[in-house]
Amino acid sequence: MNATFVVIGGGIAGVTCAETLAFYQPEQEIILVSESSLIKTVTNLLALTQTLTSFNVEEASSNVLNSKYKNINVVHGTLNKINDVEKHVIIDINIKINYEYLCICTGARPKLIPQAKDNPYVLGIRDTDSIEYFIERLKDSKKIAVVGNGGIASELIYKIQNTDIDWIIKDDHISATFVDPGAGEFFQSSLHKNFNTAEQSPSKQMRYEEEGGSKSGAALGPDWYKHFQIKGACELPAQVKIHYQTELAEVKIDADCEHPVKITLNNGQEINCDLVISATGVEPNLNFHGSSDFKLSPLKEIMVNEYMQTSLPNIYAAGDVCHAYWDHAQHWFPMKLWTQARQMGCYAAKCMSSALNEEEILQDFCFEIFTHTTKLFGYKVILLGLFNGQKLGKDYEILFRMTKEHEYVKLILQNGKLQGAVLVGDTDLEEMCENLILNQLDLSDYKEDLLNPDIDIEDYFD
Image 1 (cartoon, rainbow, N blue to C red):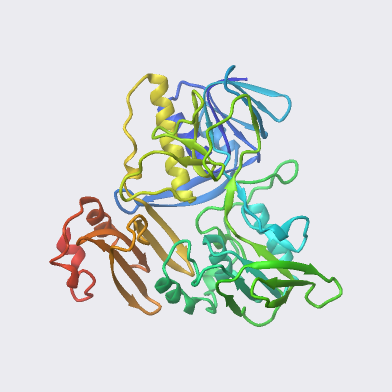
Image 2 (image 1 turned 135 degrees about the vertical axis):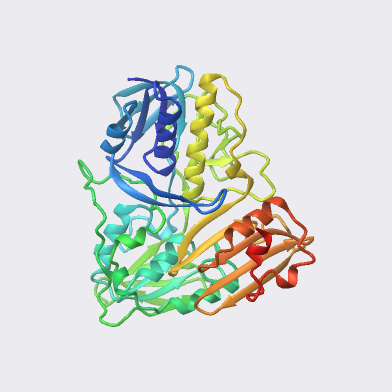
């Protein structure tokens, strides 16, 4: 097979890259290689500010791309080998695809706890298939342990019903990947809330079945939990017990006990449960061979420059598999998120298109400021700039406002200028905060009034 552009990966980064290429190069042949016959597509894309977007990620048959774009051909298979000298890839064992430009968007795989190896009672959470398997196992469980403190772990804790949960986190507050201890405390009241009827109703979203058995799917997108009912075997609502600053030390199985799993924490505490859920992050998926070696980061990610180019000619990379190896803008940094996977996939396509046309390209504006929107414990969460004081050392000040069960607002200032913000709830402050971070206006004279609820500060700065 031959194509001008070959994109490897059916996740958010890969599909976005292929779709953007189809827009910029409608006359060129594009091949998207996906392990699964299902792909992840971005829908309902909504611009909240100049750089902040919200969107849904939906699972769809790969035929959707074939029918929507005449120049995209989807090939089902797994990348086996890259030959950068002869410019071709081998898919599985018998498909050879020649390319002019190649983009690797193979994403990441779950970084499971060591105790998960060959243990049927320890489940990893990463994609839709793993979630559905977990839901099936949870139906017979009355007590589980969840290890991890990122987005998926937090969403699971919030969504699980009718099962007692021991939440094991190595930090001193919940959701530490995204928020500070204050916001973690703000979320505490949501741990034991019952869902409203709308959230409990079965999903009406179209579901597709995998062809030819299950294969590894792409990462879960934002609000994935809305489409599932996650219930255990208890008749009473879930009770959550949090074990702070602890890690899992040992897992033992005794099938004759009421709760067959016995786990020991590194503080010596023992817990009996029915399942252990590993939601401890991801590692890059580089399960293929190459005729040449990529330049890799210490975490084994493919390093890319400011044009998403790898160390090998005509080969690009985007999403969780790569590391942004360039001088970052003051208020931006890389993080393994679906928002950045989408941004990188889109920008990589622009760079490849410009390379084909021998055009100069400027780096996308989305890399000027870190932005991310998600939902945690039922609240809208917006993160802007250096939202946890990243890069600032200890020389900064914090302004915050909290209304219990309503909103949590934290602003990070250095030398009187806004550097980052955490906005939880419907604050409507995101556009103002983004503008103040980008234009670096001196706010020294306004600090006392920035979060005064009696002053419409957003209207003032507009």
